[in-house]
Figure 1 (cartoon, one colour):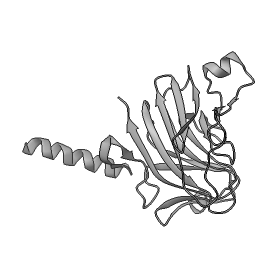
Figure 2 (figure 1 turned 30 degrees about the vertical axis):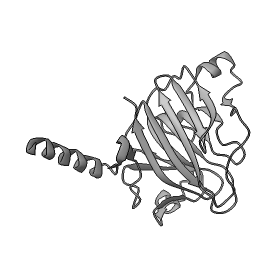
Figure 3 (figure 1 turned 180 degrees about the horizontal axis):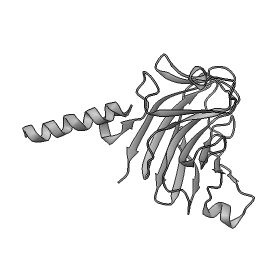
Figure 4 (figure 1 turned 180 degrees about the vertical axis):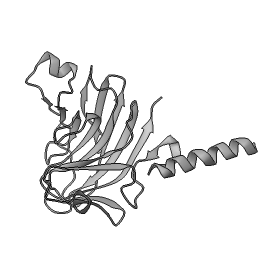
Length: 210
């Protein structure tokens, strides 16, 4: 028993050092609520300082809207990701990236669109493809299945993205919105996009499925 307890302590120390914290029901908090440990910052405008544009404020990730993103330092596969987002000012544009394989302003990944009125659209970005895209090359954007169910500016929304095997499924505020299959990128980094206006994120939690 003492040996097992020592192993658990060592595992907890590793998670803390990586900027993640173990939560109940096997979920891992990718954002620790204090700083951006475990995340890398990318910004398009080289005249701006990413560390000033993408910050932690009041226990939340605050992205200014200048074009870029933050992404995990660790790649993941087969997981359920839950992220809360809120527009502090006017609702504009942003996204959640999964399975980032190559960085860039348009990274190779799948984007769960958070654009106002279109939350739940899925974008095949930067060369990442899917069965839906291969069957119709005009479908770089796979439209959401149901009417918009986003909450008003100032209120918190929840995106739940399930990445399992060759499929990505999206729920917005608990309602199914989209699914793509036969994906080419089956693992990669997770990212939060800054695009067009200030946005806040909190409770970025990942539950492994395997």
